[in-house]
Structure formats: C-alpha cells, structure tokens
Image 1: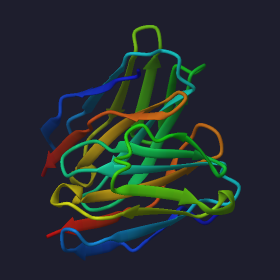
Image 2: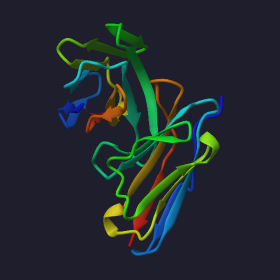
Image 3: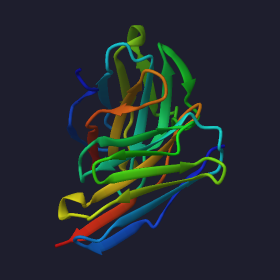
Image 4: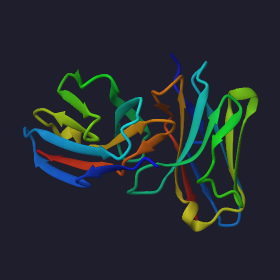
Length: 111
Length: 109
C-alpha cells in the first residue's frame, strides 16, 4: 500500500514570497490533515478535511494561509506572503477513520 | 477542548535501561490513542495504536497501556538501544487528532 506522499521535501524562500505544498493521501482515506511543526514542538493542526469539506480550520492563519482539497483527494497548502515564523515542517496525514498515517513532511525555511 | 501532555520533555538513559514515557489527556472521549516515533528531520512513524476498548498493545520491545478513566497512556520500551533515540509523540484521536509535545529520548551507548 502506497503511503502519504508530500512534495517538495524541502523549500527555502525569502520572506514575503509565496509557497505551496502538495499532499497525496492514501487512496480511499476520507480525512486529510495538515499540521505545522515548529522545531522542538509537537505538531499543531492547521486544517482538517473530510472528503472535500473543511471540518476544522480554527488554527489556520487565514490572512496568509489557504488550503484546498481537490475532488476529495489531493490537497494543497499555500502561504502568501510568508513570514520568518512560518519556518517549520508541514506534515500531511490521512485517515480512513481514526488511525492516522503521515507523510514525510515538507521542511520550509523562510529567510 | 482536548489537551495532551507528555512528561518528561526529554529523557537520557544508558543503553539497556527500560524506558517509560508518559502521556496524559484531559478528555476521555477518545476513539484511540496512537504512539509515533519521529527522527530528526523526518516524518512520523506509527508505533502502536490502542483502541479505546483496549488496555494495552504490544509490539516487540514496545508495550503501550491505556487507562481512559485516569486519562493516561504509558509507552514502555524494554532494554533500550542507541537506535531508540528519537522523539516520541502520543496522539489522542477524538473528533480531531490532538498531539502531545513529545518526549525527546537519548539512549547513550
């Protein structure tokens, strides 16, 4: 069974630039999550999708972050414009019900 | 609102010693509790998942217990090895997945 795929693995951008991350969940998984993990901390939920609907985006900084899930499958997370404090690992996870499977993450460095 | 706490935040032990990692959660209405391992710069690897109806799960040297009534889970790693050095995260699965802050483990040869 293929796992959760994320790309790119690494990204370095200057502040005020924009960036997008992509996630392909495990086939058939209805739930998709995006997490932000700052160095030394546990992951923080940014947004949760159920199929292509948003379940929870209460911690998503909507003035600069946006996310969509295309046709209930792939998802993209965008940051525009990026700030220094957005430097983190962005993790995507998918779940068929309550067990989560994570991708390798995208490490973003904003300079 | 679910809150998950992991104590200690960091742990250093000599090789061969048993590891005990603690996870506490405030809302007992969970479907399961999952333990993950995270190596530096890497994603999360699932170690054990305990369903809410279960008391423990075992895999090799790893054993995880769950006590919903007291809001606690414990991960035991027997006879630790340097390769066990990593950050261990617990996740409480209710309507959403809530992470603890992790315990950073160093096993010294």
